[in-house]
Image (cartoon, rainbow, N blue to C red; front, side, top):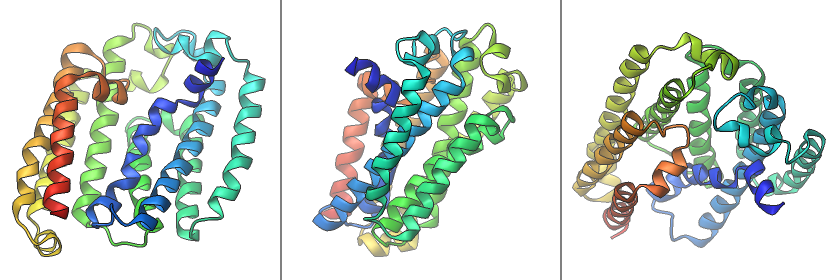
Length: 288
């Protein structure tokens, strides 16, 4: 039962909330205990909120999920967990979240509420509108970064915000590409897929990949970045960033595995090694 609850809450997807830590890391606050703890709490708040959204989504889409080759194994769609129980759990999580929000500034609470409402609209309406659907997914990642900046009251570079935007767009587009390649009856599973074609997806995936690489590269060499960190060496981390983007595209294009971002990152050895090297290089150049 515990395993099914973890799958219902999408605990594995909590890793996505690492985006909340981006402002902390690049504001040189990673080793400041109070800021680290409050950021960790903010990431946890995003995790609980996302789990509530996942539950609502699974209940709302249970009938469609039964027709999906992968989603049919989700707890609600498979019948392992009853919809009524899932909704009760979502309500309990909501009340659990309220005292946690009391620990934060109003700005962060506003961001978190906006994140919840955006995902609620996405679940019931926006995910059926072509292009708007991927913009909504990207906006969720943007709100995580903005929330991370607000919770420790730091300024975040415009180039870093743009990098996050293009990266999240890239991941959303890759998800759609793998869905189109995987499904044989997409009209009954995800309505918006009928409005996408592989040619269109391939073009916008290339644009988003180029955008994220260019924005990150410009962030590393911007005058403000060099002044703040006191070094021009951050530019050398770009090679790991480029490899990560290209490797992700390779996996999606050759294995159609873009539906689950976390699975790609934690199960692909080159991605793991590259991620570790990138993380170490960022810590070294930013802090030492």
